[in-house]
Image (cartoon, rainbow, N blue to C red; front, side, top):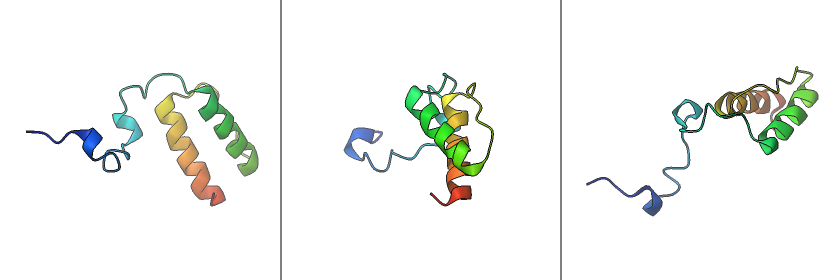
Length: 68
């Protein structure tokens, strides 16, 4: 029997963007806004055509770069 992910919500919280069911959908407005802010702060180009998964990976990279 498989554990119910709802009974361990923290253990299920971290999932690689490439494993997201909706990862290939366009990024959300909130994610785009945050990515745009991070891109501007880092002096990097903002790409508004990223998927949810690609945007998440880009956000992670920019957060590490800016130590946010």
